[in-house]
Amino acid sequence: VRQLETDPIFNSGRGSALTAKGTVEMEASIMDGTKRRCGAVSGVSTVKNPVSLARLVMEKSPHSYLAFSGAEEFARQQGVEVEDNEYFITPDNVGMLKLAKEANTIMFDYRIPTEKCAGLESPVKMNGLPISVYAPETVGCVVVDSQGRCAAATSTGGLMNKMSGRIGDSPLIGAGTYACEVCGVSCTGEGEAIIRGTLAREVAAVMEYKGLGLQEAVDFVIKHRLDEGFAGLIAVSNKGEVAYGFNCNGMFRGCATENGFMEVGIWE
Amino acid sequence: MCHSSETPMRLVRELETNPLFNSGRGSALTAKGTVEMEASIMDGTKRRCGAVSGVSTVKNPVSLARLVMEKSPHSYLGFSGAEEFAREQGVEIEENEYFITPDNVGMLKLAKESNTIMFDYRIPTAENGKSPLKMNGLPMSAYAPETVGCVVVDNEGRCAAATSTGGLMNKMSGRIGDSPIIGAGTYACEVCGVSCTGEGEAIIRGTLAREVAAVMEYKGFGLQEAVDFVIKHRLDEGQAGLIAVSSKGEVAYGFNCNGMFRGVATQDGLKEVGIWK
Image 1 (cartoon, one colour):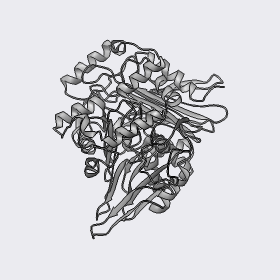
Image 2 (spheres, helix red, strand yellow; image 1 turned 90 degrees about the vertical axis):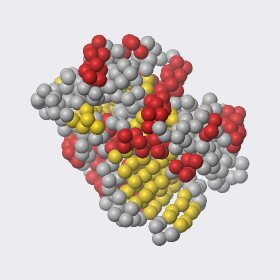
Image 3 (cartoon, each protein chain N blue to C red; image 1 turned 60 degrees about the horizontal axis):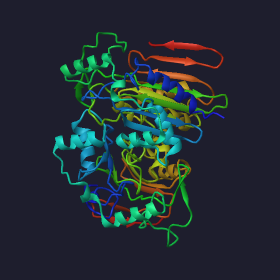
Image 4 (tube, rainbow over the protein chains, first blue to last red; image 1 turned 90 degrees about the horizontal axis):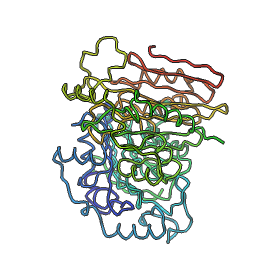
């Protein structure tokens, strides 16, 4: 996830979506399935790799979740790499923020595959208030090792033109990220819908309580827990299975194994 | 017509104003001696939710959480963004000093002297609270678990829940606990409403509030069964408790520590309070 955060194309770290004020507020979480230990940060504006800070919260602090100026202070105490807020802002995103403000909406990332070309036709609603689009290119990673231990991490800049202070699903354990003895899950999409549906935890819950396999669980959760929103997720199980699901047009994803197998996908 | 989330919000507002409880006025203090409050509210009918964290001048954080749910395009606002939203919405504001009580200043001093995250001495304990507990592997003497919460079900079976707290005494500034996290400290859906209190880190890791509903939905448990199951199996290394109601009008609670302050009231006039098992 550090690699993806550094890459300006993705909505995390450098290249993050901008708040209504034109600044960057990043958030991330990480979870270790073995003992369900977790760490998360929100409102981070100078830390080069938010997911690394989330990991330090998990390992070096007595808490699970730190935010805003408290997270920034902790980052300095821990000596992580920091950059000025400008480092994270890309020209592409400045342009998109302008578009979003003109349309007075929370903005779609035009790079998301859509069936139409223009992408701004039908007004979609989030939480009942109109939005044209949203920036769903949150990055995430789920991994399982040869002993069946799972882990997950998610990192994002959030929604383009979001209110300053807005926290989405990515740093929330059980919503955007979850890992336990049976699986690891990371989600992307409409934060509000993922929170409401406790999406990441749900995959594990239906495996544990209904005995579903990984792909079955993923399909079930995408079908039944996303009532009014668009989202997707990636997941691995302690048996080494890999699965993904989404209820929108596409989701950028990739998979790699230690044997050298690599695959990427966008559409169903 | 009244939202089902109106009742828990009003009740929690009362508890926030009361300086005895760890929420609103009377909140636990951060390591800096300030107050950072958080709250969440959830309406079971459509699972709409609102939450705030890092609130330091809003008199009733749970009301702000409700405004986030109803008047913003988001579900969760924190810190200065939440404070700005509060001013835009015109909620009651107080100086940070309003929330700080002499009792808590004294406790913070004790916590700093023992270099730990501090117990609320009012919590019922069997011994004198001597044995050092650990949270997340780092030593702490105690914690301040008097988070306040409310769960409610109306006569049409609609559930709602709300939770509000100042968090842990001597916590790091910026620390977010379970209370504002949907699925951890608060949850409500078509089958039940749940609010938790206790060690935030354990509640987050166990997604406690959602868990009660999940075992009801996926394993077909009744409310009390679900609560017992969750307390027994999802709290591996931490102490916590919860209150819950079901769409059938049942009331349940559970905890794995010595006691939990709780009360129940019905429209028929039944009122009951409890501390111990």
